[in-house]
Image (tube, one colour):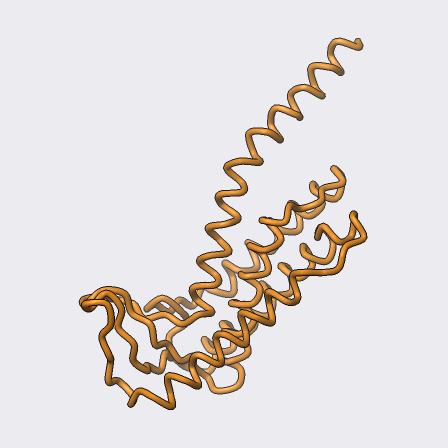
Length: 200
């Protein structure tokens, strides 16, 4: 990956991390309930688990020499990934990130107007994503690449690390939470609108 694409990747990771941090600071449950912040502990756990697992793999597995476990269901090796992510590289990454940030700012405004306080599940999902994105961005800034080591299936196309899995897990939690919360929010909005019409 050339220097301009690497810079795009690092800047995109920093921007996404900043946006997620902003949502956690503004809408985290502790802000409304006076509780201790839980999400920094989750972020730290993701970073430590990712970097610790890479150190362990580097100590026990030769570069490129995969070990097979559970009848080939899991392959563990050590691979240097110079691509932007998930086996692909795009010159549009930073542009796409900026468009997403504009949408996130609009969402932040809407949630702020409604006095939104995120659930524990949403907070955990965002914290997992923040830990994953932040450690990937930091590793690329430090060494220009990331180390992947975990492959699923004997013929799996992609190799992952714990930061990747944390991002996936966080995204899954947020989607599941959204599928539960969105219909309820729509019902509440409709009830408020109907009440307003009835008052007239």
